[in-house]
Image (tube, rainbow, N blue to C red):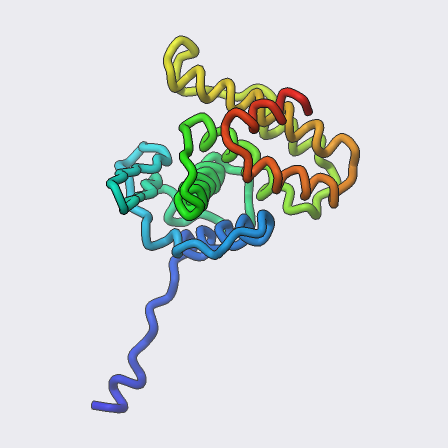
Length: 204
């Protein structure tokens, strides 16, 4: 019995679990955040053809979060390939961490904040602060976006505003080509609320 128990194979993590944890650790390290709960414990699979969504239910003293990911994300490649599926996963982890961090410091969060921060985080994660061609990456992430929600809907207007503000902010942050300064400005942006985020982005 002891030998059998000792030889029991440990269940290996899936590619998606490894990538989720890598993204979480990278964002926590970059922004200097306290370690959050393991995001993989909050992941659920959506229906075929669905897209990333974060579900939140809040009570007086409890916050429940579920990160619903497309089933196609189960075989996600590691390392930040700029596919649509990877960007959805990165956005989901961004949402999760931002919600957890704001709850930790007892501050509110809006849907616009979540979307705006996620747009910035996708650039931070994709760049890795090792790539030389920032302009090319900016073009890939922010030029010619495709929005699923019509412009005259609440969600459509919110996504377009978040995208526009993030593009303006990120472009100006890296225009000076000073990575230390860029990191400081990105960390300050992360800790700002919605009103301050919009002010910073418009002033960038």
